[in-house]
Amino acid sequence: MDFFKRHFLVPLIAVLGLVALAYIGVKADLTFVFGVVIPYLAVLIFFEGLIFRIISWARSPVPFKIPSTCAQGKSLPWIKRSLADKLDNPENRLQVFGRMALEILTFRSLFRNTRSELQPNQEKPEDSRLIHWSYKWLWLGAIAFHYAFLIVILRHIRFFTQPVPHFVTALAEADGFVQFYIPTVYLTGVLLVVAVTYLLARRLYTPTLRYISLAADYFPLLLIMAIGLSGILMRYFYKVDIAAVKQLAVGLATLRPVVPDGIGVIFYIHLFLVCVLFAYFPFSKLMHAPGVFFSPSRNTAGDNRWKLHVNPWNYPVKFHDYMHQEDDYREAMIEAGLPVEKEK
Amino acid sequence: MDHNGNYKNEFGWFADKPKVPKKLFNFKAVFIGVVIFVVLVTSPLWKNLGQIIPGPDPQLNTAAIMKLPEKDRTCVESKEYMRANHMLLLGEWRDEVVRDANRDYVNSKGKKYLASLSNNCMECHSNKSQFCDQCHNYVAVVPNCWGCHWEKEKEKKQVAQSEAK
Ligand code: HEM
Image (tube, rainbow over all chains, first blue to last red; front, side, top):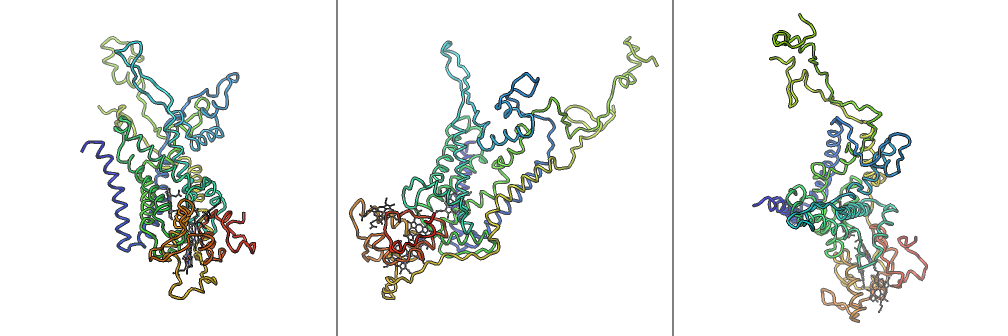
């Protein structure tokens, strides 16, 4: 099997295998395992793994200050700095906060994504030219995906709380404002699947991206796609008893688990895939979510010019200075006629 | 030659091994961040922790249902099917009526029903606030049918909790 096929097919088979596993498990009457034991385990692994990784990151020293400086830094008083300069090359905590907020809420550095391509040179037909241009589709796909994911998860709070917080019902109402179909279609659920399909297609379609994509890149995309599709199938086509689902979910949330009878298999498939996602999270590239907070190029202020940053690795070095050097080689130096500081 | 030290890395000989301090850098910021995350994620769940939350309790004791003979006291389809699929059934009815002018629904047992929300579902289940709303409030859905479709309780000016905005 060639490189691409191995790295794409293995996660595909893995996700299908997970679906089959949940299906067989529920058919074998393991609803308590799939409805209670695995969700609790997944949540434990998620938090434990998350905190473990965060602590190990926090223990890694930052040797240098490397704020990315794509803008005019603070300098002489008569050199003006606009707000954009301050947000790009922050001089203090507040401005760093602004840069982080823009990064996290709007994916600002992704917005500046460029694409490079060799294109035929009009003037010299036998040559090609390297062209860079601003490429916003990845940003659009990513931001649509992340916000759809967030809103879908927030809407799911209605399964875990009683009474349901007001903002959740308001969100659901806004999300279903098209009032299309019964049950009302939630736009973000569809958007989630569309966006994740784009993100996957991008990796498959572009040869250079396909070349660098690994199983660890495809697996989360396929997993999230399967979660979205199973959710959509469950909501619009193969209905399950949602009132019973809520009893199960509330049971989990209140630590008084119950497993009502008669919930369709597709719910357990959806839930199992979600559990796998949560348990997989701390060990995967999905850790970019907490990781962005630890990015020195984003979270350090560009104050190198007036604040000393001491490398925490710095250790006492035994110096071997010139006088020691001369002590070592004095005789040879005199013999060769080189000038020395001390004769003896 | 002994280069006055015993440790070598790619840059040459050094006196001591580099000592990376075993500590959490920026402990305060990391701690606050983790706490904020955990609190934010779990906060919707605190209130009900350890409590038993009763499920919905839809009432089936309307006059129309009580009038049915004991063995025929069923819904248009089986109870399990209705619980999960009643919204799809309503949509199917609507499409049949509005698009094909077909007001008959033949259920899986071959029994014929009038395909109508107000004139069939709500005849038997005339207690909307004790029945439909029981479940819908529980799962926080607000079917928007009642702006157009009539139901008996409207006469009594009882507005369902889910629709009282
Ligand atoms: C990573 C987390 C999850 C994602 C991304 C996700 C995604 C989705 C999506 C896209 C839908 C389609 C309907 C919609 O747009 O809301 C859906 C429906 C559903 N999900 Fe999830 N889900 C997640 C976690 C869960 C969990 C933990 C449960 C357990 C209670 C759950 C239970 C359901 C149910 C019962 C439906 C059907 C909703 C309905 O009929 O109204 N999901 N999910």
